[in-house]
Length: 352
Image (tube, rainbow, N blue to C red):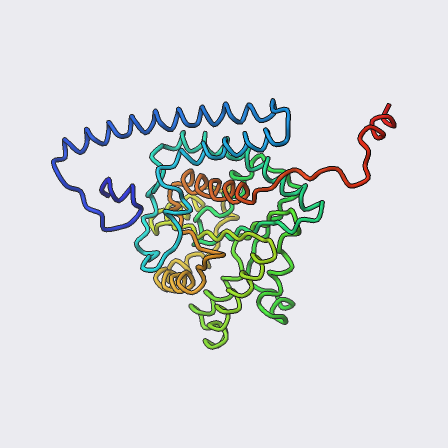
């Protein structure tokens, strides 16, 4: 793979010039990137440390916003811009082991994720507090991808400092008899976030379009009609105060093979292996075609899709962390005041 392929994350980029000159240029660029990222992360860490020392709510919020901006500055191109699905983009052109927009290595990404996680926890508390006081603000994260694309690990790493009170995780499998007796969105609506909460879907309502598309389990007219129903469903969610982040983790077929083999080689991972995963792998092209249509029909301005290269787990986790933190930051929340009629002086007197 050429240098440009790694930077853009798309197949088809070409190298040019003499190899020796390119190697030297790459080394120089890498050294400069390492210094820039290290410097930026240190500045973000210092700003985060200043948050607790702030004496006013306004100062705390300003320092939190600045620290988030510094964390975003680590990226040479924001993931929300670089990875958002757009007309003419094809999932087959996304290179699984590319790291578009991030010039650092795994260690840099881990440092970034740790700092970003602390700020996600801060914004999560702010979101929860506002929900308690009547705000409709909430967040839904949809994680999709082929088997072994890293959906489960995203939650563990990105929310490492989050408060379980306020985060709801749900994995969607094959619909039960009860769920099939209702409309396909019925089981999804039951798992949506309450005000102030974040819900993370490991698979989602999109399975009820992709699986029938591939396996013909419902009439074509029925599953195709679901595109419009899903768009309306998500549009109404956003209008009611629920932000929606939809992520498709693009893992390469070779990387998936490596993960499947590791499960077969490690007795502690046998539980992760299912023969049905191989059946889906055999129909890889059918899955990619079905998902491509999903992106084209349901990536909207209010709820766009992000196609995230996922062979390097540290990169995909950093991307999700960035998207999550900036989404929470952009809600522009402040801490709720005391309830009307509460006299702080009287409360302190009673406390002694």
